[in-house]
Length: 441
Image 1 (tube, rainbow, N blue to C red):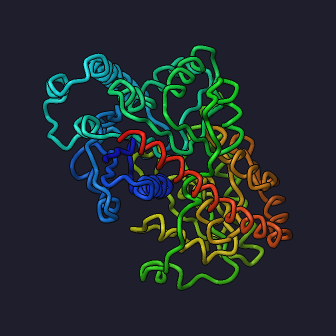
Image 2 (cartoon, one colour):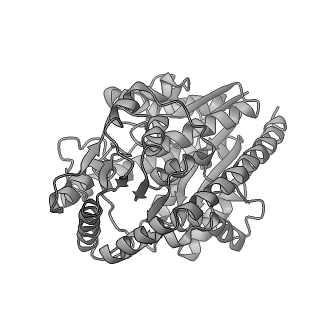
């Protein structure tokens, strides 16, 4: 029995890594002997950097065929949060060519077609693995959300391409717990409904996403928590002990990201407001005697995803120079160990919040991109500790943190109750997955 995890894994994003690793563990616990994952990257060196930890973890990788249109632009890539017009134009042209190739492979899904369209690929590519696999599993995470843009259908095509290919090749398709919604536009909703109704198992990671699919009449969709909540705490490695040796019992971790604000018209203004609010908040924490650590949760692969850019923007605006950056060659379990040494976490990267909660470190979420933050925190009865990134301001950050200080015992009690429920959900998921996979034999 073989399974392929899609759409891609990058070890530079430790939240994404955790979801892939937990997806693989679930599949193996359900009886799959051979599990592989699609890789990510623009060249051999890049792909190695983004998958070496996963390979060391025992999960083989296969070459991605849904490539990013940015792959020819290494010399033009911006070091800022937003791309220039020339980069956007070239990316658009590359994306059109990619669309034509992928569509033709979908129409005629044969090895002959693939070798004509991708002549530079070897036999370790994702398409060959699709042919050989029994199950295609979409890793957990953020999945589908649209905001009324003209490129929504194009986005859905690329996001759902491996699902389309899996269904076209008559594979059993599993959607592990994802965030779905908001979905705007009647046509967008119809396309999503058409595809998801044909997947064998569909899970969402918040009840608000379940409501979205219930409205679409995807009746077999079920709620299961984010897979990162299933991570098992490990003994801290030597490098984690080294990174946390100077951390006091009054340490606050902060994660930020160079977000592009697709929900608003003036994204530059929104980004400036975001980083300035976090900078004022960092100064406030230091004035109260806290150590402030900016943790790099995501190191790439692009400027859009590199947390260090946003951290530098925040620290440039801070009055104090006492904040410390934690950035190194860590995997998801290493970061969870680091968060266990902190008193509080304020996380834009939502998996920094989940990693913290796993080790009973209270965390505030700065929510972005769909339903995941508000939905997951709501399911834990912690909605008051979510601030939307597009509405962020220093006053709300300060007030929410002071509330967290005063209610940390209650917060931790809810985390402990949640952990018991999560273990039950994992057992339920394995039972359903085992029965589904058994039906494929």
